[in-house]
Image 1 (cartoon, rainbow, N blue to C red):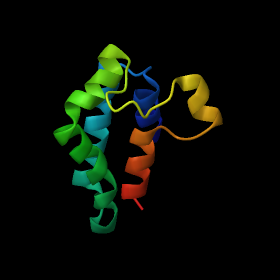
Image 2: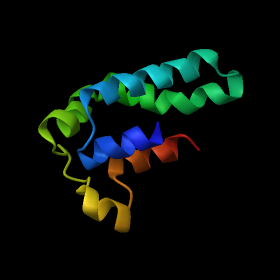
Image 3: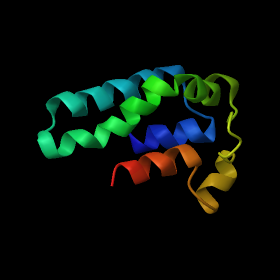
Image 4: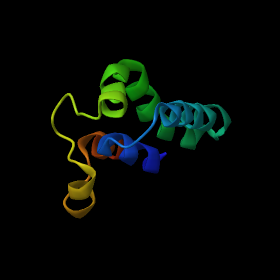
Length: 91
């Protein structure tokens, strides 16, 4: 899931990857034991409440909040905001 989130933030993901991410997060929620279920909740909530912003990253290749960096800068300097926020929520 992390790789897909990074690709979304970098603006290189596809719509199919959004569907895959949602399916993976849903599978984790349904199939994981109770302590592990919460790991997928930030992803599911992001897709539920911020789908327009996620789709802007994928379809329009832009960050509506103007906080995600292009792919070349992302790897060398810091994590994209979308990924960093979800990683913090999963701790």
